[in-house]
Image (tube, rainbow, N blue to C red; front, side):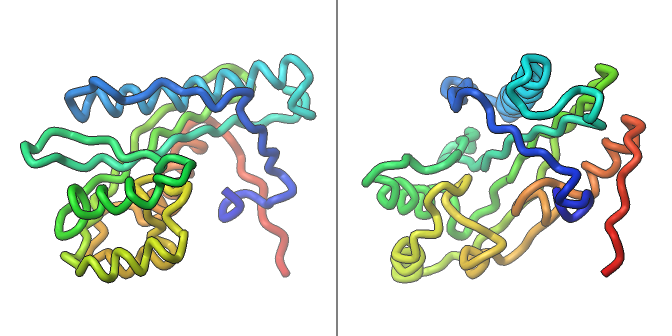
Length: 206
């Protein structure tokens, strides 16, 4: 976000709860994307509630737009059914989970990084979008996967890898927005803010 808006103009408001609807039982990519949009929209509503309730530390009069998003990796199983890879479990089993993901869904195959973005203005207008990027991995050796797991980098990462860091060694091709895989999809977010009538503050020259 700081790539398009000066850091001093950004207020980060964590959600009041980390509980979110899951993706279990969703059998199509359309259903997964609809659930993803629902999560981003719920985050937006939660942030507005915090602003109205006075717990966010800012007033609505100071808000140009509320931007929320959620990202998942959508892979396919052996029968081409969609499988959502979120963040690996935050426990001792995280490495086993990521290892399985790499060998069953990622290595030598193409998956999708999908981000739901919700932009809500102080006037109540809502703009929503799903941005997808196809990412193809090399068919790497198990030894390289074990080396990557030993770095600890996959912890807390959607799909169990970080393209912007060491995880890039696995990537052979990216089709679509690169920023969508490493964070927010910048081009699409700029378009959404423009459509919402949000005038972006300028960065000060160095």
